[in-house]
Amino acid sequence: VAPLTTALMTSVPKHNSGVASAINNAISRVGSPLVTAVIFVAVVSSFYSAIQERVPGVDTSAPAFRQEVAPLNPPEEGADPAVARAAREASTDSFHLAVLVAAGLMVIGAVVHGFGIRNPRREPEAPQQEEEPAGVARAARVDTVPDDVPCLPVPQPTALPENPRLGHPRPDPA
Image (tube, rainbow, N blue to C red; front, side, top):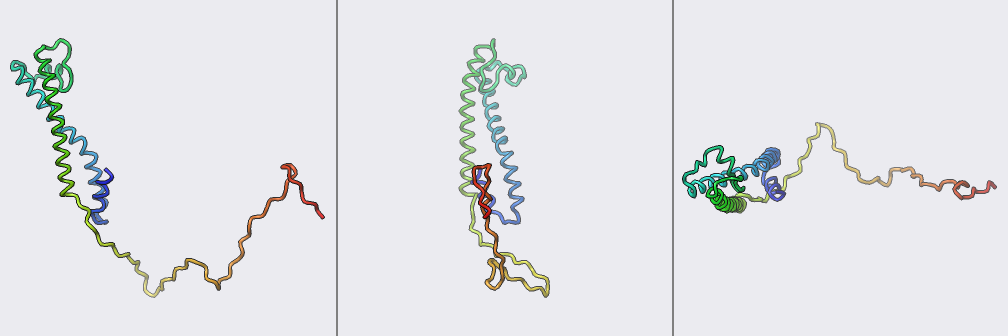
């Protein structure tokens, strides 16, 4: 996700970066559930139509049947052996279809990435100068203290007086 975010954020002007970030966030949150839904629709429709072809007398649209036989799961105990066998075969076929749909979506994503996402070279933006009020001169920036400015010496840390309780003798008051 980081390379995609970087590609997106560097491809838009700075004044549109908030909108680009919002769109990126929305797509990243919606994209995964949307892809999952597409794959699920393919699996379910393939699964029940395959059972309908293998066992013609079964009404696969009935809620009771769908409760008893679910895609990619073994049928409940006591299910008709022909339906159980058809469900196993349909689950395998549906899983293969799910893998193909996922691979197709990945190829589509690669094509979009290859042709649609570019990192154009941008000209460096000139630094924006703040406008000074009329009649006010801009002060020169001083990074160091000039030699002609007197400075007070900074006191250096001194040693602490010795303490006999800590094993240090006091100096003789001579």
